[in-house]
Image 1 (cartoon, rainbow, N blue to C red):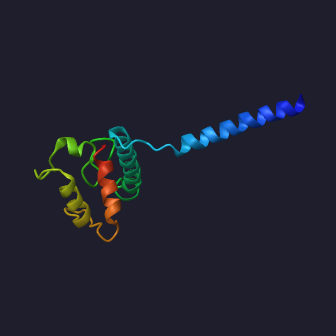
Image 2 (cartoon, one colour):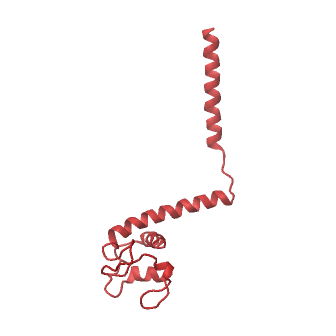
Image 3 (cartoon, rainbow, N blue to C red):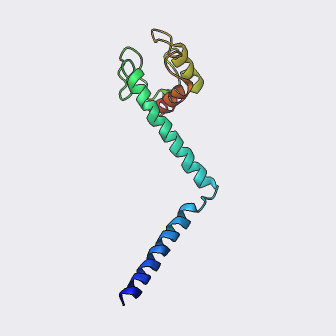
Length: 128
């Protein structure tokens, strides 16, 4: 009786192990949902990294949670506003140009931030 119980227990255990391995090796279909999920995860990771850069490099001068001006303009809603204070258009290229070159009292960050950090920072600024 004990031996039969042990055999049944072994059979159930092996079935569970092999089922788990089969599921783990199952390929995710390369459909729109898999790509979209992967893209969203990548975007969220970039936003998270960008928020860290913003906190270390930008928050001291640029508010992210209010419209109040610190030393520089608030970044809250800058993409929604669509224009800088000087009337020029807000887009990824113009934000990158400001970050890289600085201007109007803002220092250049081309020697401080690498291109990946700048892309992440832009991804974060878009969420403000």
